[in-house]
Length: 196
Image (cartoon, rainbow, N blue to C red):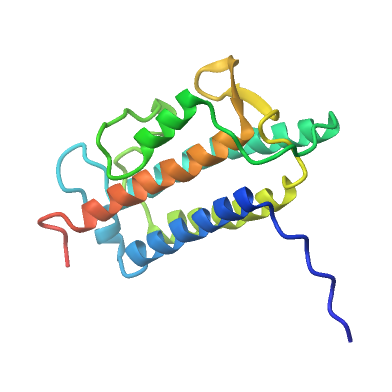
């Protein structure tokens, strides 16, 4: 019996983003997989984040950004804004993304509602949420392949609706922000005193 018809390939820029999300998840899995909850919650110093806090922060930020990205893409589709080409980021957006990328050179304060409290957290709760996001992100990219992600915009969740973000730029920011904090989490695991 013939199989189902193959899905259309993603445009190259979205295929690259999907591959980035897969690579981030694999890197994080190599980091988190062997850890127990004590290691997951260990912090190298007072007020420094644990590995669990790094991932919990990513889960919070990803939830805050992905919903409006998808809504903006749906609105753009309804308005007939079909894909015109690859994701393009403005010069300020490219500079911001470069600042996010590891190795981290400039520290940034997390928005208060995404800063994870120091309370102990269970890997069995935090890690599956991280994995689910990546599966959802890859599926969402496939669903947005027909949309002009440069004209699909939404109000910045932290700066207000008067500051508009391009959906494509937001997706690139999500990936860079994830790499930043997974890199930070690796530094925790490699720190002196980490429980072995």
